[in-house]
Structure formats: C-alpha cells, structure tokens
Image (cartoon, rainbow, N blue to C red; front, side, top):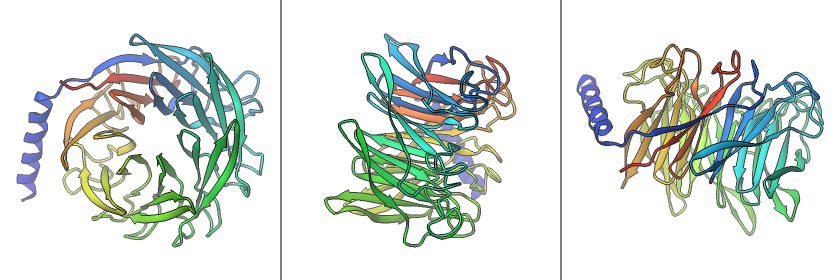
Length: 410
C-alpha cells in the first residue's frame, strides 16, 4: 500500500510540475555593507513593494559585535533597491536585533531577544515607521512584567495597529512555559492590551515560539507541548471581541508524534492556518523529513484540512523550517534539502482549489550552493515570495542573502 501511495504521489508531482508556470527568480538581495557572519536573511517580511530583512549578527561599528540590524528594500518597476538600514538607537553588543521581523505598510517591527533592559536576555521589540521614504524609530517595547531570560521578541506579528509578541521562555507556568503579549497603537503610542498564556500551559512548552496574526485572530505555536506525545507540539487560536482576547481552540496534528515539534512555525490568512512540524518523521521520507498542516475554520470550529509534505522529501530535509501563507497559496521552506549541494535548501509552493491542496513547484536559488540553507526564512505577499538563505557566502562566510521570486501562474 505504501509503495502504491509513493508512486501515485510522484506521478502527481511530475504531472503538476509539468503544467505549472515556473516561478521566476526576480532578484537576489544582498546588504549594501554585508560582511562575514552577518546572517542576513535570518528573518524576512513582505508588505506590498517593501521587504524587510534581518541580519541579527551584524557587527555594527558603533554598537558592537552581534548588535544586529535590519534592511529595507523597495521595488520599483520590478527592480529592488535598498532603501534603509535600521539599527536600534540604544543598540548594544549581542542584542541580536533583527532575529525576527514583521512588516505592515509603513511600519516595521524588529525583535532583539538578547536585549538586557529587564535582565539578561529579557528581550525587546523596536517599532520603526516610514514617512516620505525615511524610516525612524517610533518606539521600543517591552512587556509590563518581562524578566531575565524571557526572550521577548523571539516572534512577532503585525497587522495595522495591532502587534503580537512572543516571549517563549517566560516562566509564568513553569520554566520556559512561554507567553504572548498583545499591543495596540493609538497615534504613535503603543500600549499593552493583553498577555496570553494557555490554561494548560506547563514548564517547557515554549508557548510563543512563533506567532501569526490575521484581523482579530492570533495563532500561537507551542512546539514542545506534550499533548500528543513528548514534544509533539500544539498551536492555540485566540480571537478578539469587545471583552478582550479569548482562546477559541487548541490545535494538534491528527497523527502527531514524539518530537514532531508541531507549532514551531505558524502562518495565518483569514480562516486558514498553516502549521509546521519540521521534525515529523514521515514513514516514506525518513527521520526529520518534516511536514506542515493546514487547518480551516468554519464558524468557530477548526478542522484539519490537509497534511503537506514535499513530493521528493528525504530524511533531515526539515521541510517546514519556514512557512508563509496568503489566501490559497502556501510557501514552505526545507533548509537542509540537497538539490544544489548538502544543505543548500529549497522551498515548495502549494495551492488550494476547493478543499484540495496540490504541490505546484519547487524553488531553488539559481546560484544555490552547499550550506546556503535557502528556505531558512520565507515571506509571501500576493504573487511575490521572499526566501532567505542566511548562510550564503556572497559577502563573506555566512554573510547571507535573500531571493525574490515571482510565483504568478498562468
């Protein structure tokens, strides 16, 4: 039965690949002042014609080693140019500013999880705004009760005037049980609206390892939660009403198993959630091949719609290292896939028709090479995909790069 399933899957892969438009690699983005060990592309975000790319180990001349930075690129007539380099006004060595980024319109959010304002590695988040092509720091945000080791800012999600921030090592329910903070903006002032922790949260869950936001819905990953098995993982959905934020549902994979780390990366678009289990041990593909799950909401009820795997997946590909979702299109990174050399990396595009998800094509960098880890990060906006290759060596060892693809289909 498994052999017949494998053959059918491969036939579907080749049939779909043959009829789908091949995405075009539009441009390769590099930091203007890129240098060895910057890890440019560690985090990426897209909004319209603007891209935000984190380089969390950039050694700023003023702030010091691994202070970190983030770069803004803008598109004009299909050409991308660097518009700005963002650094924290009070940045310091080892802050790792740029470890996580989010973008919505003219607002950029950048996490610095090793910032020490409230104790070693307590973490902080910086908000920048753009006016007439000029970016300026609008705010620095910390949680009302953040403390040493919380890693506040390890995950961020932004939509309009609402900002969601994960602190996966917060200890409210035990060491590294995790929490999530919600902030809202009025004018230029950001205020904490809520702090979320799950009722069943326990030590080591790392609730908040990743977050996503769409309208009045938040999706939170807790990839080391033990609901199905040790470190099988879970994800939580919260919704906002006039009375505040409330848990709507807890999601787990139907076939969740030990060390799958379901919830390590999450994406959300309307009533659809995409959740990574990048260490899922697929029976056909092997240990840590990885997978991603699609859940859909009807009314207030969520159900698993699909489990996605790479049609050519193999052991240790880590399919699901990154996930991005826009409407009926998903992009899923597999950072250790080997088409262009060991751990060169790739990314896969899936689309939905009705309730059926199909693999459309596989993305690799034209100049991909061993250990680039293309697919480490991913963002999607409309028909534009942005994929990070944080260990690419164009500007020195592990300086990093990012690639823009046009994924328009005929």
